[in-house]
Amino acid sequence: MSEPMIFDAIVPPESDGERLDVFAAALADVTRSRAGALMKDGRVRVDGAPQAKAGFKLKAGMAVRVEVPAALPTAALAEDIELEIVYQDADLAVVYKPSGMVVHPAAGNETGTMVNALLAKLDKLSGIGGEIRPGIVHRIDKDTSGLLLVAKNDRAHLSLSEQIRAHTVQRAYRAIVIGGFREDGGTVEGPIGRHPTDRKKMAIVPGGREAVTHWSVLERLRGATLIEARLTTGRTHQIRVHMASIGHPVLGDPVYGPKKSPWPVKGGQLLHAYRIGFEHPTTGERMLFEAEPEPRFTHWLEKLRNA
Image 1 (cartoon, rainbow, N blue to C red):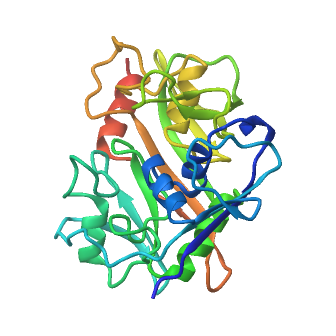
Image 2: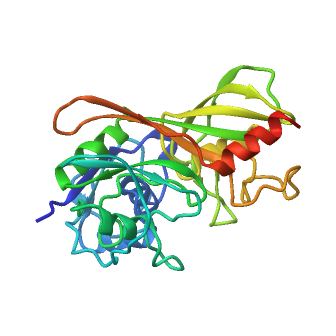
Image 3: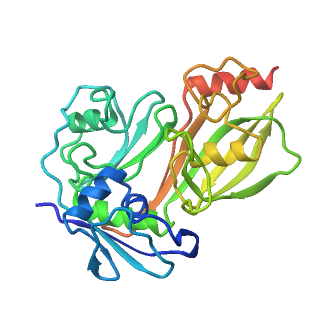
């Protein structure tokens, strides 16, 4: 039987005054409504005491614990969807997610997701992710391609999740961004949270979660640049938000890019998770995997090289 997953954090100064449900949702990587339900069940504690009031205002230095109970048997259905498995063993798998595929079922995307494919292709998945996210340790945006790390049992899931929280998982992306750079590299630091007026978007906002992106120029193109982006943290839409914030949105990004793009890129942002490195949860061996981008990405790369 799956064990509950425990998330602990000390409220940082930048989260002073933040609502508990918002903080708890970000801490446990669940929705605010899910965080509220956990609070009502007595599974969210502040300084050791259960706190059921969603609007409770936190103070810097408080200790918050969120307990996510063991998952029920998955409600997602196995589907025979083509899936590239880069590596797998008894504890984990590394798979290639194509652009256009959603990672787990949600409203409007109940089928055809990575989870549906995993249920059909792998012999087992961890239960910590819940009914609709079995095995899912981290996510990649729908229109981003690349490597995804999957846990096949709860022990591996807990180990890999802790490595992500400790920022020891190496994640690097390739992206084609609009415009050119004088510099050869840099770092973008800006706390990320929900956009204050558009709840479907993320933004750099006061009180957001710490986010750090390191970028470096790989190749200068005609009116664009091929970059590598390395994540210290892994917030929702982090690279897309950070690069847009410095005036270089990812080419093809329908949310954070310009309303009128200089190039008619279809299928979403040209962003690819090409490298992932981590410590194996059982052997302790450092593992590193890389994968080339899709033809759609390389098509635009060649096109901008020859523009």
